[in-house]
Length: 109
Image (cartoon, rainbow, N blue to C red; front, side):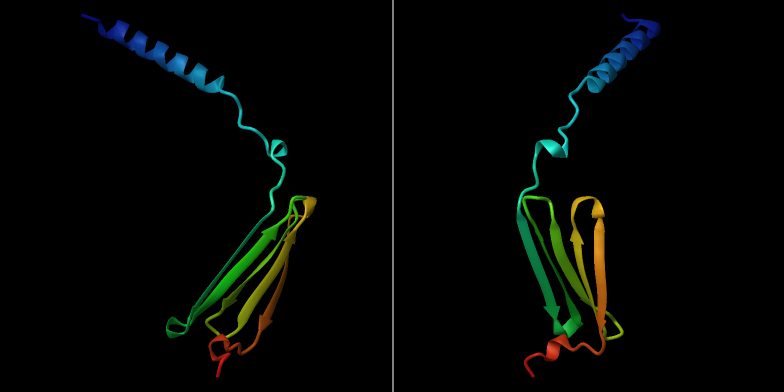
């Protein structure tokens, strides 16, 4: 039968081996190894009964430039529209505008 000291030493050795193995694992590949890929997405939500109106769209190209926007009908009746770009080191560059008394549900009326 193993004594408690021997048991504790086995556990410590196992933990040390596990930690050493985890630290020697290869590091994940960087973004530079995988160039940006073109993509596109869009969604729209329109529910007149619940007065929900919002959506977004975004595209990215093979050079890493991203162009997109989103819109949200605010509780005060304004439509907030955000258009943005991301290119190189510029980071997120938004342009925000508001439409007063927006009535997106009365478009066909």
